[in-house]
Every structure is written in structure tokens, then in C-alpha cells.
Image 1 (tube, rainbow, N blue to C red):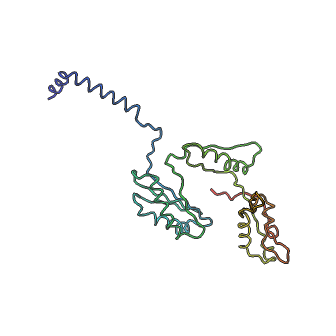
Image 2: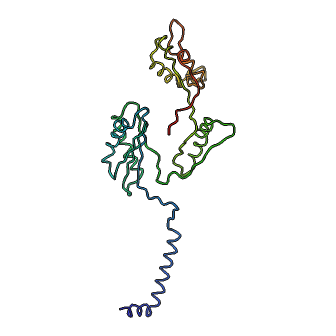
Image 3: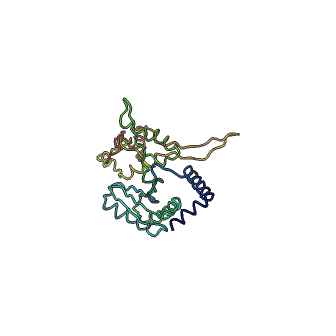
Length: 271
């Protein structure tokens, strides 16, 4: 058997030569056209749902936020499993699909189911999908430093300059910020002043929220010209917040500065 096999190749030298050349050519062609990746993506198709629930303990997050979202995700075509993590003030639900499912189809299905889940969530809680990422998504860490700059100033530079520029780089899905101090305009309420003025705390919240916006009022015509009418109410500094009117009594306005102290502070850091 072996002798006949060897004899065949000896007799048909032309066929063997042509076959060898074809195999070598196919190998060279495959070498130049084969996709090569230093970090091949072996993670499954997944969609992450992040939901902030400020003030809720992990138990309440699990019961009121995570469970309703998990419940509506089960049954989506192509779903393999649903995993979740409930932390203080944060719910993370990961929906895993089969490898043959298109990521954009998966995100569309998850988005449609989220609209159903919102009806079962507490008021004011809005779930959102994370960016399209893989298991090797976090590929670069950097640090911002600056002489004479506070942690608050460095974080502001990161969030409003560096982060926005990096998001324009092709292939970058998202940029996450860690550390530093997030700038906040803080309204520190004087409870005694609220009682003396007989102003409910909710009225203070609503006044600050409703007066921090610009409004449009169409336009007016004057001869051959049109003048755009705008209402400028967007606050720009601490003094603008202090001067927000809560109500008027006897022609005298009661402002935020009369019942609270307004200052620039830092967001409470966790972790």
C-alpha cells in the first residue's frame, strides 16, 4: 500500500509539482489576507444597562430597579443569559447574546424592552445602555496633572476639554473619568429661615430648577426687520442662584439667598 502510494507520486511528477505550487500559492495568499489581531475579541455579544438610583441601598436597588429590568430582558430573541450587579445607588444589568447576533440588532431589542421596564421603575429613575465595548475595551489609562491647579480644576479640564476631544478619535467608544473633585453649585438650606418665612422645602427645589433655563418667545416685527425675543434665565454664577425669587410678599421678593447659603463645592466622592 505504501509502495503504491509513493510510486504514484513518482510517476505523476507533473501533477505533484502543480499541486505543490498551488498549495504554496494558497498559503501565501492566506498569509497576506488573514485577519491578525494582537488582542482577539473572544467576548460574547453583550449589551450593558446602567441605572443610577441615588440614595437607594443595594437591597432596594435589587428589588426596585434590577429585578424589573432583568424580568423584561428574558425572552429577547438570541439571549443566552442575563447577569446583574446591584450596588449602593447603581444597578448594572448585562444581557448576553449568541455570537451570531448582530450587536446593533441586540441593542435595538434591549432598547425596546427598556421602554416597557420604565413603567415598573420608581419615578425619576432612567435606565440607559452603555457604549458598544468588548472585554478588552479599557485599553488606555492616563493622568492629568498641572502645577497650581486644584483637583477640582483638573477634573473640570478632563470632563470638558480632554474627554470631549478624545471622543472624536475614531474607534473610541467612550471615555470614563475617575478621581478629582467634580464641581458643584451647592445650596445649603437654613432650616430656621425656611420656618420663619413659612416656605416649603419643595418650593425651594422647584424654584431653583425652574429658573435655571432660557426660554424662547418667537419674534416681533419692526418695519423690515425681525427681532428674536428670548428669556435669559440660565444661571452663570453663585449670585444668580442667590437672586432666584421664591415668592413675593407685600411687594418684597424672598430670594434663595434669604433662606440658604450658596457656594461652590465638590460632589460627594465614593469608592
